[in-house]
Length: 325
Ligand code: TXA
Ligand code: MG
Image 1 (tube, protein in one colour):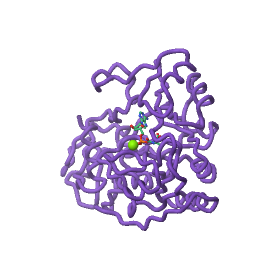
Image 2 (tube, helix red, strand yellow):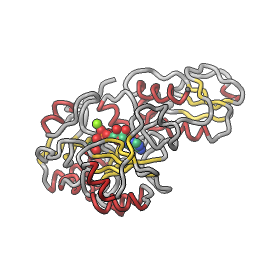
Image 3 (cartoon, helix red, strand yellow):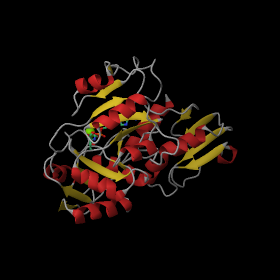
Image 4 (cartoon, rainbow, N blue to C red):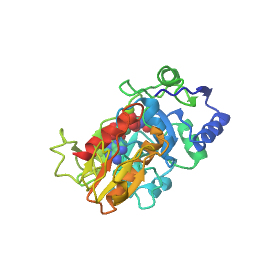
């Protein structure tokens, strides 16, 4: 599936900020400069807008995204801060630092944006254009780097155009991103972990915390002793998942897609449809929410109808396959 959208590029200004804010509120995709790299932003609370980010980037899987907010009060509304997180946030924000924290109880960010994890990555960027947009919009904005999946991050509006013209709504041109390197990501766990080196030096973080940061274990196996969900590791339901189901066994829950009939559905323990009109953007937006709800339904297993492997279907199937093992 390809999407063609008219992409407007406008120079940073008060009008550009207002246009960006309106576009985000309408569920659109806006590329904007941060001091690290350009971000591709969407309203973090709008699951379909978030799904369109993955579509525009052509990401074959749903990596969790960073939620950008204007100030630390807004950050505290979406995540739980421990003492280390408070220290890091109050010292290095706004700036090239992202903190991975436990999701707050009233966090309004779509589950798709956090890939169903119990944690959320949060950042307050320093770039004046990013700050103006976040302040004006007033809600968290998820923004991965504004590049096609597999390409390098973009640091100018022209690079964003080269990668994403025709796939996103608006590019706000605020000149070159001066750090040129993505933010440093720290997982605020015990021990604190360096999840990605980036624009803020490890030594500065270690000096503030007065301790060394642990390194990310190299393989998922080595990550096993760590708390589940704290790394980029994927969300997995407790119930077994059965893929490509065309019939339902008694006691199973059905995760449906589209409008075709499934034999035995009357005996299903529960049923939710990712998209009854067969729309893959809508299906992606509902994926983690529906999986969680069916997991909580007490069904012995979750049977998933076949999902076409095109457009966002590829990423949906990637997540479902991981959930099935
Ligand atoms: O500088 C930056 O960080 C830029 C600007 C736009 O803010 N953004 C950026 O986003 O680089 P992205 O999506 O390209 O990289 C975000 C990284 C991914 O590797 C993702 O796996 C990780 O952050 N991440 C996000 N949420 C996470 C979580 N809950 N736990 C662990 N890792 C997470
Ligand atoms: Mg990236």
